[in-house]
Structures are given as C-alpha cells and as structure tokens.
Length: 339
Image 1 (tube, one colour):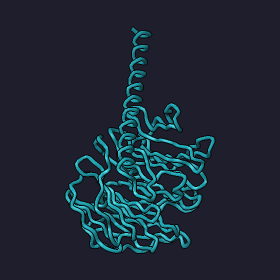
Image 2 (tube, rainbow, N blue to C red; image 1 turned 45 degrees about the vertical axis):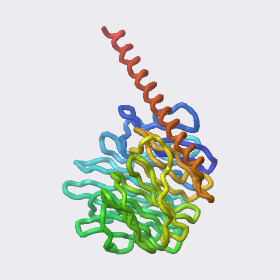
Image 3 (cartoon, rainbow, N blue to C red; image 1 turned 60 degrees about the vertical axis):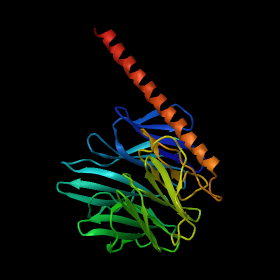
Image 4 (cartoon, helix red, strand yellow; image 1 turned 90 degrees about the vertical axis):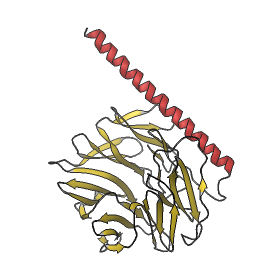
C-alpha cells in the first residue's frame, strides 16, 4: 500500500488487491477499484500542485500512467509491450510539474535502467545495464542521484536538472546489496547497503550495524534528521543522526506487537502536507506514515503507532473478507441463473 496526503491535506491510499487490481481509497470512503488490469508492481506520488501520479503495468506488460488533477483520473499508455520485455521496479520522482520515472526493463539476457521524464519531448534514456535493484533520491536543488549495481560493483550517477545531463558513473567500494540512498543538504550522497547480518551506511562517515534482516533497510532525511530504519526479528528498528550522518544515536525499537513483513520510508518535499514515513506492513497492508518532529516520539507515542498498525491490519482483513463474500455471492448468483 502507498499512503499519500495532498497539499490540501486529503488522504489517499493505493494498494493492490489480488484478483481485483489496483484499488484506491480517499479519506475514510469505501475502497474503490481504480485499475482492474493493474499488477502488483506500481508506484504513486503527489506533486507540489496536489496532483497524484501513478505508474503501473497490466497483464499485457504495457506501461500505464494515471494522473489525478483534483477532480478526475486521466489514463495514458506510455509504452506498449513488444516481445518479451518486462518493466518493473517503478519509482516516480517529481521535479516541479515534471515526473521523473525510473524503472528496469528486462530484455532477453540484459536488464536496462531507464529514465523517462513524463510529458517531456525527449525519449526515455537507457542509463546502464544493471543487476538487481536500484535506488534513487532527489535533492533540494532538484538534482537526482542513482545508486545501482553492475557486475563490476556498485555505481552512482547524478542528473543535474538545470543542465538536463547525467554525470559519468562513479564506482563505489561499498559492499552488500543495494537498499537505499538519500541526498544530504551539503551535496553528499548517503548510501545504504546490506547483507543478511549487516547494514552498511556511507556518507560523511561510515557506519556498520550488526542486524539480521531479510528486508532492505531504508534511509530518510526529515526536518534536519537523517534516519536509518530496518527490520529485525519481525520488528522495526531505527537510529538517527542530527549532524547529517557524522554520528548516529543508539538504535530504537518501534513498539508494535504485529510482525513486520515489509516496509518502506518515503520522505516528501513538502513535509507539512504529507506523510514522511511508512513504517511497515502487516500482511498486505503497509503501515501508516508518521511525520517525526522534535522532540523524538515518546514511548507512549510509539506505542500508539503500534496500536494504529494493528487497527489498520484489522481494517484490511475486514475489507478482504467483504471482498471475498461479494465474490462468493456473485458465484452463487451465476450458479442460480445457470444451473
């Protein structure tokens, strides 16, 4: 699930429901089906004008783009599938009114990393051949950083928006699988990688965290605080830095009795209007976002977050149950009409 809030403080939820497609929920309204042909791999964000953008694929592997202007949804096909090419790992980054779409395209024995500025006259650009996942981040100065892996190791590239040009790849000595990256105010790129028992952060200084995790950890820079967030033993842990990664506090565990199965942290460019954190998922449901400001949340506040997680999980299970009942009723009606 992706949780968004617009600059008008409207809350939206987007999630994939098996056998139904991509669904939407606005505020506390009943969830509605947005794209029945949509697949599980999709991304959504909200720009500074309050428009909502969604990128997804369908069963035919077409690349489909949705935009909500505050009143209606518009649907566009960005790329018609040809042959066996498979697009995935979508990520949308807004720069002004422009949406920067990044994704991988599996083509025969190669995986290409693609940059597509939606609605721009330029064609999508192939940035490199990659292996596995990638990470991207947007700076306050509208530059975009990429972190990706090749056979030769890890690399970064930077896109200067005012020059419309990508830098040459820069090799990193960092080890592990790619997790996340973040642009810091001084122009430093903070990178995060991991192995099954270790998390590696590299920025102004390097940090090694011993943690047994099967999920990619996350980075976020919010209100002058740099966060590293990860899953360990089914729970969410985090440590923070108030000096842009030069020093980190001791890890803190978020209090929730529900086991975490997947999670993400997505900072926004207008923090007073949107959620900064999505702290996990229970079953198919991503945990609600929270905006952390000083002082650090008290144990009581963290405990309340855990309660909200469980309430959302119950709501998700109830919605799934209602959907299953509706499906069974339709099957029974078909049987009654065609004995």
